[in-house]
Image 1 (cartoon, helix red, strand yellow):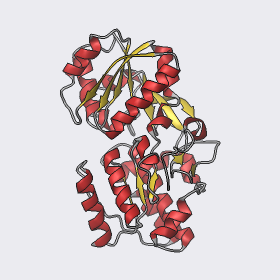
Image 2 (cartoon, helix red, strand yellow):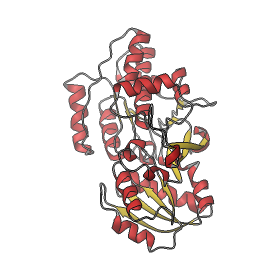
Image 3 (spheres, one colour):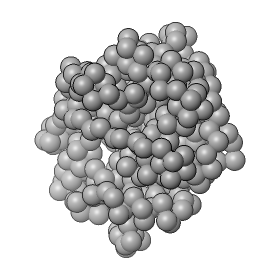
Image 4 (cartoon, rainbow, N blue to C red):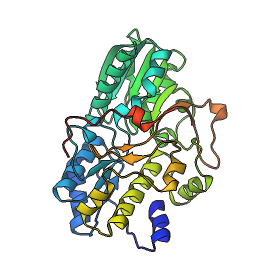
Amino acid sequence: MLAARHLEEEFDVSIEIITGDSAADPNEAVSQIEGMVVDDGAHMAFGGVSSAVGIAVGAWGSENQVPVCVHGGSDDITGSQCAPYMFSTYMSNTMQLGPVAPAMADLEDDWYILYSDYTWGQTAFEAYSEALEAEGANVVGSQAVPFPTQEYNPYLNSAANSDAGGIALLVAGLDQRASTSQILSREMQDDYSFMMHQTEDVGLWGIDPEAAALLDVNSQGWSPSLDVPEDWLQEVGEISDHDPFVRHYMGYVSVDQLVRAAVRADSLEGAAIRDELSGHEVENQTIYDLQPSADTIYWREGDHQLVQPTHMTSGRPVEEQQNDPNKVWFDVADTMSGDDASPEPSDECEL
């Protein structure tokens, strides 16, 4: 883990990273984090997980005073399901659509939305529907897609039978690969505008590069096409099985911030770490180098959201896609500051 290596060098400490697989199941995730804490002695936790898993481990962490940084986009994480020891490193669904909804409305008047049928997809659908209507666009149809699903043709048929000029793909994980692959096989790419939510580059690598090229508008928490240090990208490539992508950034920030909070507190007690992180303004220059921003990046006290810039990307034409020294298939087309993208803390959140 790159952040641990950097922190060990800076503070002359020893950091052990313990790993576990949530299997995208909340009950299994709780069992995993409990074992890590009780049996392995972990003091804090983080992870790129589904929103349902994030909420479950955040609740367990709060019951047991273990700080947890989750990488899920559901607004419930910083809303009705917020928890005092849970911190959201990833932008909420509402934050992510900030720069995207106006671009979608400019691109097409009528949209059809396909969304993964679980917490993350459901809250994304609600957020996008409201935002598009506020921008003067129409949601002419929608369909919840069981998650995970590798057969998208029935849902693409429904979209094709609507009057939509654009199809929004609010789908997660490998469903991003399945949906775009089947769009290409049906040769729909020139007939519609396409939007993808919380685009994960790695989910599209390994299939035809045209899958990335067909995506006109995307919400994306971070991209290697930002003006970020080449040496950091190189270090990630040396220790990871994947080219640098958004989850590398989110994981780096989570470990960096949790450990720095423990150092400031001079304690491994969960309550002390939580208190140091809540409301903290990020000071580490590396984070600003990775997420270029003229504004302060900070952990909002009211809901523990990391307030940071959020990006809109577009797929590069195949001939312009970079594959060496690392893959860059998307360009950042627009960026919105964290404060502008993020609504006020939800009234439903009581930390």
